[in-house]
Length: 397
Image (cartoon, helix red, strand yellow):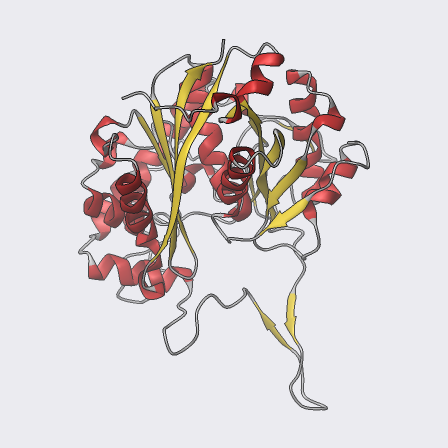
């Protein structure tokens, strides 16, 4: 079903360009590339491709989860050579940060607070600073820690792997199903890479040792037997392994979100129109099923759409267990999502992953000219949050 546009159609938000870096394995080829240097080449590519006047960019919204703080949006904008008048902002919704940045850009356009935004996210696990807790008493030693807290102890704040184990047990997701889903992700990603399907969306990155042009993590030789032989990582009697969980990664992704009116004035013929989005919370101990709540909330607001009628779904694959549990609850067949593989194979650069979902939708619906088709981007987030956004491929002129 086609989206019913708002009365002031010129202010409909539309994604008209979407690019990402290759996704690198943490401490791999992108290990020495700073976060702003992952973003800057994408900014330059988008400006060059669209012909947008750099000074017309209202803001640069960048999600980041594990970095050193500060304003990565502003740092990247200046690194890319944008005019000093273009501001920037950092957004933190953890794994959902990149998608939240795109949603925020769309909402700003709907509010007529601007008409042109660069939005997305970045993560460089390799260059992220160590986190150190200040001692509470004089003479005490500082304590290193891996992540910020997402939930108080009274509620529960499990590590991501333990939360995935909780979900697997609560929803009866077997080890075999997890391994089979992980194998599917790798096979689809390898097939897509070999067919050149990722090439149009990737901006190559200079690493100091040459150019990185391909994702580092998809494994063409993995098998169900190899996955089955891996030991559980988080619980001795658990089912979550290194094979059915995402790796640690470096990467960046940005899209250009502009008003439909601006797109027309630039002569842009088609784009990915933003329809709506929803965020919702769940039990932090079962944080991986957050997309169930956010997707149901979104569909309640959009009664003209149903999951059965959505043409493309990109669901972030942090852990096979949480993806499968969420799909079961939403009655979505597992073989209908992530048609070119997902984060289990490609990788999960936290702050960038939500934007990568939108870029994958852009490739499937706009680069492949599927006008009229609809897509969902869905992601689970630390602390027990889900974020879902809906888009439609439209002609603009």
